[in-house]
Amino acid sequence: MVCPESNADSFWGYRHALPLFGKKATFPPLGLLTVAAMIPSRHSVTLVDMNVRRLAAADVQRADVVFVSAMTVHRESFREVVALCNDLGVPVVAGGPYPSTCYRDIEGVDHFIVNEAEETLASFLRDFEEGSAKSLYCAQDAPELSSTPAPRYDLIDVSDYLNLALQFTRGCPYDCDFCEITAMFGRRIRAKADAQFLAELEVVYRTGYRGTIFIVDDNFIGSPGRSASVLQAIANWQQQRAYPFSFMTQVSVDLGTRDELMDLMKEANFSLVFVGLESPFDESLRLTRKHQNLRADMLCSVRLMQAKGLVVMGGFIVGFDTDPPAIFDMQIEFITSAAIPIAMAGMLVATRGTPLHSRLEQEGRLTGDFSGDPILLMEPNFVPRMPLDVLQKGYARIIDELYAPDSYYGRCLELLARLPKVPINRRDPSSLAKTRRRAFVIRAFLRLAFSAGGLQFLRYIRAAAKINPANLPVSFLFALQGRHFMRLRREFLRRHASRPR
Ligand code: SF4
Image (tube, rainbow, N blue to C red; front, side, top):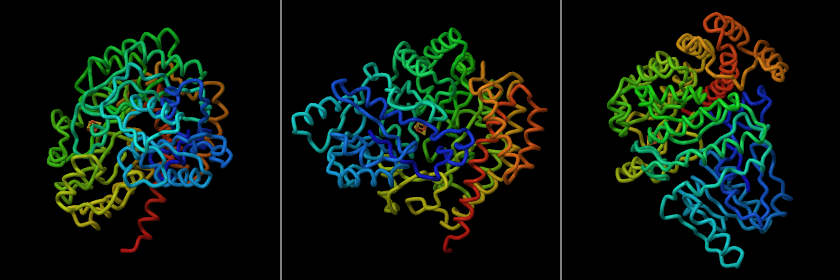
């Protein structure tokens, strides 16, 4: 099994911060680890994550068949893996979001497993063993997750990763027009049983890993009742083991109006949520069918989450047809008032299979396929209503202003002032005070203090210690993450400045 390398500039990739953490990649390839667990034990499986190490020809030559799973951020590397397998004459099976949406245009792949693999993998394996495998295995229905096995964490070295990952649900009840999640997983929430999820926590626990687990659900609170039930179970499990993990996940903004769920999340030791806020401009939210963001005041919802001790990361988009010329200032102002240090601001892109893609296709406005990471992308794959150069300049200004050191640290300090005066992690598993991490802290501190922006960092950490001493470890983590975004900003602006006008 091969996980291709992510686009070097990916926001989530933390390329500029990983060396400070002493890690090689941000998240493990959960999809492949899960598919690996579905393969009967008579087959031997090995996994190469190219974000951790190089794929050698010998890895491919040793295999009867190579499975590659890819998202669009892996596109370039995916092509290289397929080409290598073709050169070496080893059959390639491709699955995951990118092959599932674009398989008609992908060359060199022998077999596609399109959509979720639970239903089709067994037929493929049987046919492959009999020498009669077809080129396409396409799941028609969304499977229940009750039979989904726990991921094969034994296939990787967990110490290579900054965070580990698990999944509780698939699907999202909402219908945002740019989102491929509902096209891929549907609007019905399919959840694992509480006991099944706890068994997966045990699998991770037995690896010896202690730290943050990303629950990768696209909307963890898509079924509030199921979320409440599993949160209670996680809280009990965590308490019995003295809180070995903290959690982060993705939620819709209505979490801010669900007091009980937020309390349960804190009981279970959740510390960070990613929220698709998208736009402070109501007309654009309406156009993109993000109605849930119009039901309550978004700023107020974010503050309620922060007051509970949840750090909010936000997704933001510019380039909607209804966006006014002032949208760039509106976004900057909103993100600053909301005290969101890590704001994933990107241009709107139309992904295949989404209602947005169909609409733009009908209107004859598509200019190509979206490839890569929508963050830091300067070319939408459609003709925007706003003149392209205005959109590009405005977007570049958002990145420039948000990730200038003073602006980034300013949002961190405001957030720290809003968080409760108790540690946001119950027994902060990523606690920088832990003895075994002391050397890492000293090294990272010195690197931040003696690199560009060192003075701003020192001023920030002093202010953070005064504002909210209970959360000094997390203040330091913000600084480490900030280094990645500040460097991305520098590279992005340099690239943008050298673009032909
Ligand atoms: S709430 Fe998020 S996951 Fe759900 S449809 Fe909208 S963008 Fe997609």
